[in-house]
Length: 313
Image (cartoon, rainbow, N blue to C red; front, side, top):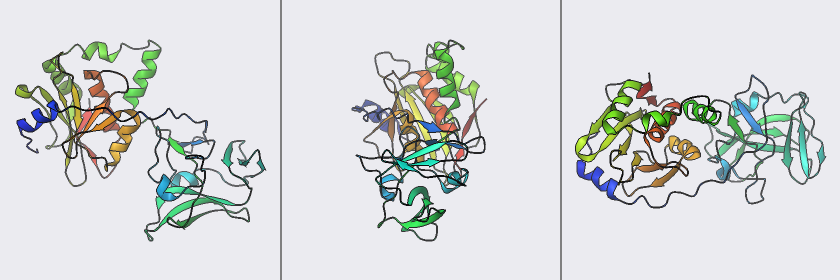
């Protein structure tokens, strides 16, 4: 376990968090489900940024708006592109699929087109994968030079619940179907909440811990371990003192893929301590249940080769 001095964490807590990042505009495009054999939904209209629909790969490779992102080639291949028709009207090329679904590529002509996929070409670092139709109307996958070309983009979003515990609870709460979790855990002080964590989460490795330190009023949980055995931990401080704003801090830098997933659901702000981020709810106070929402989101969104350090029981 990395030893972090008491003075460091006291100093971090005392620092002002500053204003959080601006919340992303709501983004809920019309979308298509191409059937049970596909793992993502497809946005009906192609992506535009500042009125531009033809984009470079560098413009869009890290694009993620509320979970909507570039498809992978594997996700492209899940769609039945056979016998597709591409009529042009209303300033769009309409991709009409045999099953009746339709995608709309906003553009000025009905010539062939290609669209970016999120995959880099493994053999050629300056090239990225694409898919689409050439000028002869033949669908294919290809590679394009990321420095020379601009292509169109259709966005996709995973069908898998990114956080079943968060979103299922939100849905059920809105219909009064379950007892609100916060009514049970938000009245707990630090000791009670610490016991709750131990009763509902199990450490999976000898490097993962749920610890509490009385003299600086914090609970620390190891959420996951990356492939280099660097522990990623989150800290919840001062939950017993109503006069001091509680803080959730996670030791994770903005280059970590998990950072970008967290950003789609929560508000993040930087700290003056390198590699650390403050996490805030969007428009709500930080509470015990919010800490659980963040923890559950992290555990649900860890991808290989990284590994989860604790699990719910």
